[in-house]
Image (tube, rainbow, N blue to C red; front, side, top):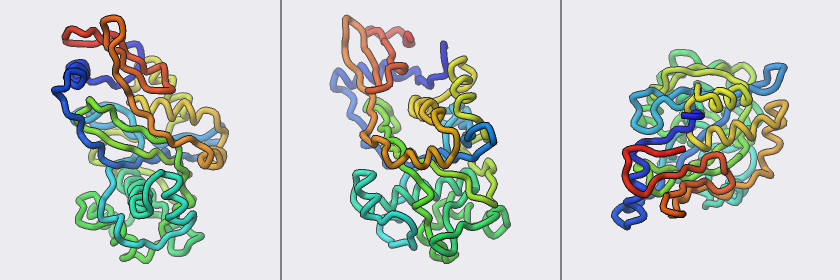
Length: 292
């Protein structure tokens, strides 16, 4: 493997089945993931998790905190600070209820997997240390889905700080993948007084790392990543601070990136529009593997 691109061995067969009409694409599940940043004095670092090797989806790959949208968060009006739900609906390309659920998912997953909560008691405050036993009990209830994020905010009298998030990009899992997600990527800065920890049951390692360093690890094959992860890391290298990255977010294009597979000169060409580095050439006849 020349680099750390995550590439499941079953993809060629699934691509051929899709082309032959024998594979019905799975409807992608809406999801959100957050690139949590903090300043280090030499530029921003991003919080990354390494998914457990036993995970069915992208096992061993480095990723950001994230996960699926909870439909319970789209029909309950949570206390909300920052841009309106209508603004977020326009920005994310969805209706207002779905926009709230996606933003809630971004904030909830960051809390569930990194212990960082983008919410406060007032529209201009953020909670402090969230490592106490009572906080942990609520976090565990969120992870187990015994408690919705809207209920959690209500119980604690908290306001969701949507202004602390910036929508960065949107990727949809290819049609031939068995587990599909329509994922909105956000950026956020680590709030003062809070600290991250690996709170995820899906990860065995957490690290703060400079985007350029992480990208270099991918390039040498040391760090395994999915295309959207390494693509966003490369984009983050242009910014000298977390605030600078957040300021750039509103102008970012959120047109979904969706991989396509086509037949060219006797082989399948797998490509991600606008991201030529991920192009794969796959023999049309089953060989048990793929060529880079």
